[in-house]
Amino acid sequence: MQLTVSDILLAALLLVIAYFGWRKQNYWNRVGVPYIPEIPVIGNFSTIFLQCHSTFSYIEHIYHHTRTRASDFFGVNIFIRPALVIRNPALIKKITCTDASLFLNRQMCADQFHDAIGYYNLIMIKDPLWKQLRGLLSPSVTSAKLKRMERFIEKVGDDMVASLDVLPKVRPNARETEFKELCARFTTDVIASTFFGMQANSLKDEASEFRYYGRKIFEYGPARGMTMASFFFMPELVPYLRLKLFPRDTEAFLKTVIQQEIARREQNNENRGDFIDSMIALKNNNATIGVTEKIPLQGDILVAQAATFYMASFETTSSVLSFALYELTKNPDVQARLREEIRSMIDKYGKIIPYEALTNEMPYLGMVISETARLYPVLPFLERQCTLPEGVTGYKLEPFHDFVIPNGMPVLIPIYAIHRDPQFFPNPHKFDPERFAKENLDQIQPCTYMPFGVGPRTCLGSHFGTLQIKVALVKLLSKYRIDRSSSTPDVLTYRKNAFTLHSNEGLYADLIEDSLGNE
Ligand code: HEM
Image 1 (spheres, rainbow, N blue to C red):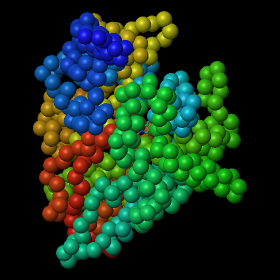
Image 2: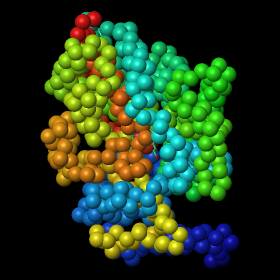
Image 3: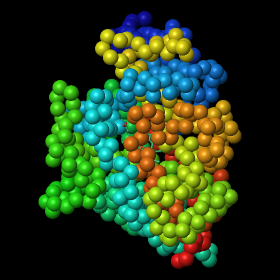
Image 4: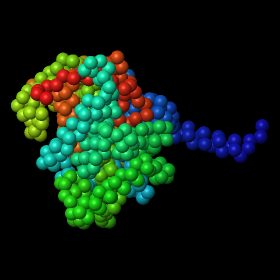
């Protein structure tokens, strides 16, 4: 038999693949950490990358795997890179809070040179630039700023109810709607109005540009799905493939509208006290980030901040809001109690419930939202990367284990699986807002409830997101009671090609006119 050059090359390639496969499998064996067996070389997340499984179901599967369920943590391989998944809440606390300074970064990363908007933003950027940027952006979401935004959110809430009022009736006083699209339109209009001072009109106009381009960010067809998976699972590939965090046309749209708005306000000397004004102030004060090289917050870098707040805001908030409405549909007792609370506030304050009352006087509303965010966390896992000072090669996990996390290793915190673990939340699949009643809060262990993340890198918009959900629920439930419709799904399954929690099923319900308080 004669061997050709291509036979020899193929054999050599297979040998290299087999060697890497063996080394990877061997890594977790060598360091004595339980691990999830995988397809050699391709790693544990290949089926996610190829969009065969939902990330959420897969994370839950490996979390309860017989090989790992008794351990504080276990190993997985993200293609050829070993990563650690942490199960033990005390260890999560140690890594994300006590020793947070060594785990400030996420491993996902955009291309610094060809994707300024994807790279220079709070979600992707690495410390120390992250700390500087967070310090500059935090003042734009203080409670004083949120209080000022409330009237704009109320206005969008009224638009949302008006958009329901014109739906065709399926029975006298009953209309049917689908909550996912409704909520995405609500949160799109809110972020455009409150942060950018613009009318997105997505509740009124199906062809709204804001909604069209926003939808494209989270619409994961095969190409976009793999692009997003590369940011998470293979960040090294991102610069080579020139991948961009935002779809190109969405980026162009956001760039144009944000730059035009900045220019318009500067020309007219207009100040609305919103996010765009904060961006203008940063630019005019010559704010910079960077240690040796100072990078001015101007041009694309300024746009990057507005664009990522837009991305981080509308999908997350609408996800929690739509699942809350779905659970209220399925749990009429919870809904009745919540409507009673809303009725008492309307009796006290009238139709516009002040910011302070929404925040401090509606405990049941807060409990319903907290329980929704437990059962339906937006992300499957949080991720961090071990980043040690020069000269230090490893982070010791003692007294938990003698394993030492090497510099650069990704660490995953499987929040979806932890939130649904009966050890931490008895009867975990039951929607039970009582878990978050004041008298029950001490039963929730630290670092078992993390819908907004944990530690210094936690969500910057958690209060803003919660406020939007509160306003929307109050507006909708003061006018309508929600009933099951013939299309309300009993059980939900999750999309395989999404990194945020998305049901395959539409969240349909009947809206029954049943106004609280005087019209
Ligand atoms: C209910 C709605 C929301 C949920 C459930 C949510 C959830 C999250 C989660 C889980 C993280 C990762 C935290 C971590 O790694 O520890 C995050 C980060 C972030 N979120 Fe949210 N989010 C919501 C709304 C918002 C809103 C409205 C905004 C903006 C106005 C926003 C802006 C951000 C930003 C900028 C980060 C990155 C923070 C950093 O790395 O410093 N989020 N969010």
